[in-house]
Length: 108
Image (cartoon, rainbow, N blue to C red):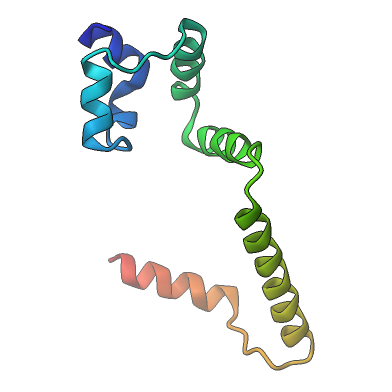
């Protein structure tokens, strides 16, 4: 794979995500992705950041990881516990206006 093709396919944004050794392997042409895979990657890298993130999430969820199911179940339980605590009045709340004012104050 030529450096120009490497730049075109991966783009500058993707380079920072790869570990150094992966980047070097790709530059050296040792990463043998099929042509259709390179085209899919090139197209995906043209998407806006939110759409790329959604694509990544969709791809990752296509794999069956037992540990992911357990983590998702634990998070769902945590969310339910927090909602229940809120509804019982056990969880303090902060008005959104105050939160956004604090964010703006800290941005300056």
